Amino acid sequence: GPPTLAASSIRARAVVEIKKNDLTAAGRAAILAKSPGSFRIEVFGPFGLTAALIASDGQKLFVNSEGESSEFFWGDPEIPYSFDAEEAVSFLTGAPNPQALDRPGVNASKDEWGRLREYSRASEGAGALKVTLGEYREVNGAHIPFLIRIEDGKRVLAIKYTDVEINPL
Image (cartoon, rainbow, N blue to C red; front, side, top):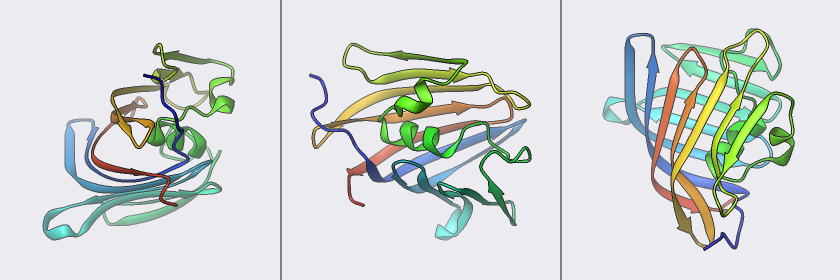
């Protein structure tokens, strides 16, 4: 049936795969997300060391990968991703942000229970954003997408949750 609760935050474990050009990297990940725009995706490499970190406090994006750390303000033309903080949290929690859905150039499709299935947006100066959400499961009354695929023209990020806790924060 339809969800009885919306997740405003999650704590999850996942398997993350990042494809960029001919390079593919995959690993276990810890994910935290809280509406409206705070998230942390930490990907672990061999021996549990952090291989990549993508985090936002809603104002800035922090990226640590390939041995380099970068910090960006959202809206900065140099930012390496086509999504913004609120969009990322809505994808991770499965709770579509109405403001993101009302933007010009956004196409979104939902299923019969109002769950977001596909989201796409053309972006000026950056690659088009295409997101697919699937394998929804009920977690304490909330419907959470256990499979999230984000494509932005530069890379493909696939997240497959293995364990999710809703509204822990």
